[in-house]
Every structure is written in structure tokens, then in C-alpha cells.
Length: 264
Image (cartoon, rainbow, N blue to C red):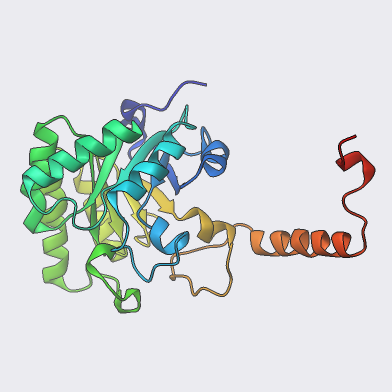
């Protein structure tokens, strides 16, 4: 098996869907590597692993550490690392932090949440040889309360703005466009207009690929309300609970550890 290349992924557009899942650690990276095209070290690590209410508390150091753990254990899939909140407010800050993040993690791409205000920042990064994935539609870093997040693109003006944004981001050098919670018809139109791949999350099957948070598809925690676009593909929560209960029972009944688990 050879490593996925950007050229490979460009050739998949309109032919074969691109797959992407998040990873924040070595074990998950090992499991995903070679099975998905792209592994995203997302700032969703804040809400998923650290119990934050939103992603704004995620730091560059956190992304560097989780990024290193994932990319070091990724041989075949390509990797993307998120630029966290308030790390790309201007061109100079964005370039410095992007270079630091890539140098530390060795990721293939960095991802930033984009709107009309930072198109020039994407251009500046691209001009300086940074491979950028642009994230449009619902951009979670703008929200302190995720309960207020709603889908976008239903109104004609919003749709036009998203189309404009996506095409401009392609012009300035974006390698992919991640589209979150965008109206189905608009997502379809954007995908058809662009020559670069679109990766959807809650933006319909019409995107060139799909991304989800690994913990969501495995259902680590059924007590957390999931967005509409999430589908459980397993129920790890039950398996983990069974294992924990079996461990506790074995210890209490002195059936673990046995002699074979002990050193002589």
C-alpha cells in the first residue's frame, strides 16, 4: 500500500467519495491509517476529550501535541490539523502559527474556518507554500454555545454568499473545502462548480467526501445529544461498560489477577 497523495484525491472528484475521520491519539490513528483517505486532527478534541463547552479553549500547544501523536502513527492516509481559535487573526499571525504547527506535527494540511474576512489570509498562506483546507458554512469557532448552531444556505443571499466564498477560496489556493451544515442544494451546486474536492459534514451526499468525529460514529457516550448529521456505526459504550463491569467483578471475587498474570 502506498501513501495517499493529493493528486489521488483530486482524481476522485465526481468519481469516488473521499473518506475522512478525526483522530487525536496513536491508537485511533493506527486504526484509521490506510482505511480512510484523510485523518483530521480537529479542534473538536476540546469538546470530545477535554469536556469543553466549545472549541475556543483549544490551544496551539494542544493541537501540536495531538497532531504529533497522530501523524507519527500515520503512514498511508493524508493528515489535516486544525488551526485553533484566535491563531490566524491576521496574515503574520496565521503564517507564523501555521509554520509552527506544520513543523511540529508534519501534517500534510492545516485547516482554518473561513469567511469573506479571511480570504486574503488563505491566499497569503497559500502563497507561502502552506497547504490550506478551508472550512465554510457553520464554523464552530464562532460559537460559544453550540446549541445556537443552525444550518445555513436556505436563504438566497446566504446561498450566494457561500457560492462566492467557495469559489474565491479555490482561486486563492485552498486544496479542499470542508462544508458544514450547508443546505443540500447549495452544497451540491458548490461541489459541481469547484474543481477541488468538497468534504461534507451535515451537508448531504452531494459532496465529494464526508467527515465525522470518530467518537460520534463509535458512540462513546450516548448521553451526549448528537447533531442530526451523525450516524452511529457501532456502540463502543456498551462494549466498554461490559469490560469495566467484568473487571470489577473479577477483582472483587479475587478471580483477577491469577497466577499467570503475576511475576515469580
